Amino acid sequence: MLNSDSSNENNPPPPEKNLPERNLPEKNIQTQNLSFFCGSYKTPEGVDVPATIIRSSSKADVPMFFWKDTSWGPKWDPQTRCQEVSRRLQIYYNNGIIDYIFSGSLNNYPTLCVSKEIKDSQCNDQNLLITLKSGENADDVLQEVIAFRHSGGLTVERDGGSYIRVFEYWRNAPTTNGSPSESRF
Image 1 (tube, one colour):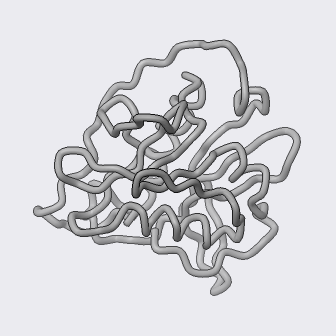
Image 2 (cartoon, one colour):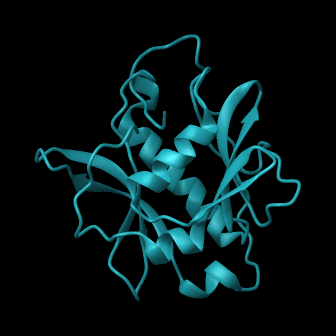
């Protein structure tokens, strides 16, 4: 899913776009002064894995994605995907468009994208967060992220798609003091 490390010619990597940064008025999630970065997290087995982590001054770090999958090839190994997705999250946060992460598709691939609003949200090059492998179910992936973090009640379902409210996820999710069980990323 959100993994990266194996040469698979049938599954192209997510497009690399230079996403413009701009300063918007703070509201909702922005009032928390969050930052997103790629850090390291120790699994229960004692293995360090790359993790996309949310940091704030008001709460301990909250891991969001754990990156273990090596099937994307050396160009998109777990560390590289972690860094890219963390970078995108930070840009989207800075631009004020990250209230929701939702499942979708782009270029015939399942994806996770970000949006300011749920209504009429569509994945495009300007809000792409993660490209999944062909045949993967983006709704299932999003549900696994929620279930994995034991932060129930955060998923919104609309028109067959799933959404995570990012602020609620951060507010309710366990911090890095907890232990990550299995993650498919």
